[in-house]
Image (cartoon, rainbow, N blue to C red; front, top):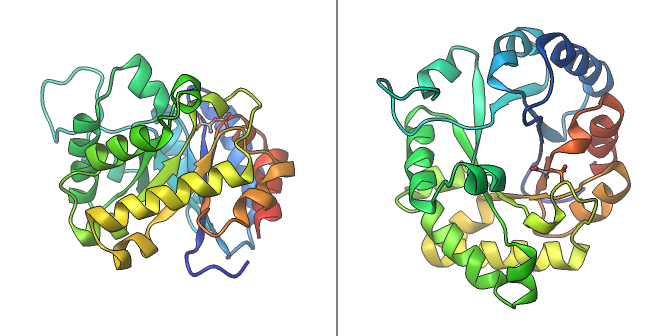
Length: 254
Ligand code: PEP
């Protein structure tokens, strides 16, 4: 695929996989995808499997991501995990502001921006999620919602930090529902996000940023989605839980 930006496809395992199951999955992915160089491949297991998966993927082309991180570095924050702890396991990417955390943990754009700064301060890369609900789309508010989320969740990043960040466009109505945004809906939202980034930063920065699509990505829709000019990868939930589906999404995207 002829795009200046390298594709990045990440699997968000959410609250799935014991250590043994996680190892089965990554060992299978290593076998299937060991020679892929065209795509940055990222797996994001739960915290409890980070150490084992980290050891299993040393010297492979798979990279490790976490599903969340504290905005704080150390201290009295029960249940939270700091950047220095993720770095012990060679984590490279951190998903921030997933819609499930925005909904269940009430994460705000301001908090996500603080976390994004903390992620960069630790020389990690954030994958910052944005996306509208079905009611917002049907109410014609998609662009307004995306602009507010992008401006709020990426506030305060330097140009260099923004270029190293990944944005994931995940329409909430498409997550885990089997409904995928049409390629045109995805492309339009991605182009809009890039336009907002250009106005917040500049055109050069906006051109560098990789924007993933997320929401019921499967082996049979990956190719068409990835062929859109502003779609630079995928954030995959359900289909990232089996070797066959995740490997086929990646192979079909190349
Ligand atoms: C997600 O939760 O990030 C996601 C995209 O899930 P799914 O692929 O299952 O829709």
